[in-house]
Image 1 (spheres, rainbow, N blue to C red):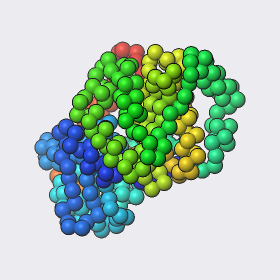
Image 2: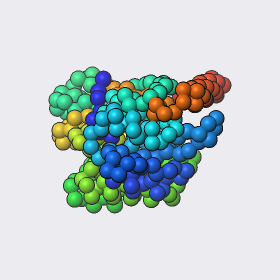
Image 3: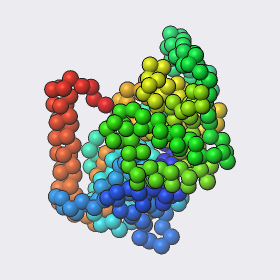
Image 4: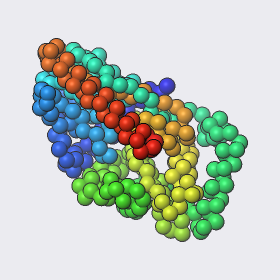
Length: 338
């Protein structure tokens, strides 16, 4: 089990750039002048009582606030008491230093659920990882897929280097992500003008600080798969991946993940968080390390026990009802969970 040290999606530069484009989210800041807590995305909920909920979107996948330095549990306690309401955080890396400080400083804590998320331990080297991660048959299959794809034309991995041009990578990503079922359902980032602007602004802000990595797989000059990651303090976290559904039989997304993995090993980082849903059908079978994540309700000690209990039970009931409805739907339709 891996311990993340930094979450680039809560980096102040990223948050400042994207929060203006996240609908229904308030920008919350530390109320104490010079305090360590910065921006994070949340919204005010009034039912059953007033409380705050983190806003989880493609642009704000990490609920943790940005921080200017290492924080103590006492500073976390002060921050939570300033909020004055219970706070629901979704998808928190449980061993992240900011999360641990918030939990330790909270007067009330209720964990709604925990799960494991795919991650990549970058100790060692890429070749050793490949040999240990995949058996001979699987490695041979990956080589075969790449060879078959290369037979279709000139296959090139376009990697964004320091000071490189970010724009072609963003354009390629938005194009290929919208080319498949996400585009058909209207859930691709390109389908939402605000989200697309937020992505461009966030990536540009992080690129200025050399915190963006981008990989685009091109066939005859045209993008067929694209993936980005944000880097901070020796750790990285993946953004979204997109690929052209017309080439699905060649598994371009898988091939691109393997190429990105090689590049990340060469950079000698420590850990990469996949930023994936639980039991993701692709990344879970490629990256075998795991990060423990949780949904949690926390509050400062000044929040009453009764108030906190109502909020915690309310979200526990909602989550249980949603899970039951999903299982019923999947059972009736014969679909698999995703």
